[in-house]
Amino acid sequence: MTPRYSLVIPFYNEAGNILPVVGDAVAVLAALPGTFEVILVDDGSTDTTGTEIAECTRRWPQCQGMSFVHNRGQAAALLEGLQIAS
Image 1: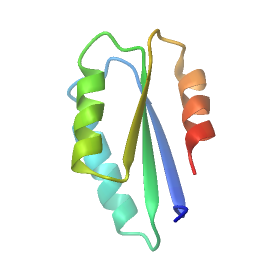
Image 2: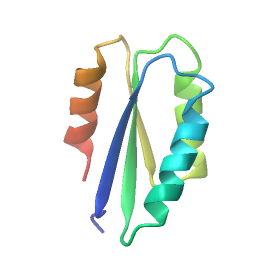
Image 3: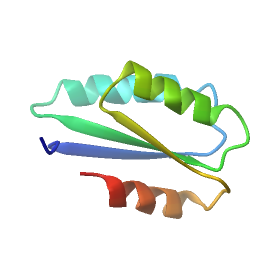
């Protein structure tokens, strides 16, 4: 089923912030009528951002992660996330 809402969040070296941000976002979206998806984009981070995004996809099935090998910038990460959003 196509989700009613899509949220795209680009991250770059945000280890420690990802789980709280995504947890809050999922809670807000879950309170709305309809289904949703959350696209989490690792923009070439050099910290444990990718590991935390993977944990989000395990905790919340509405989350989908993707990553860039090198940092491409917030706009590129946001655009890529929007392109794969349902």
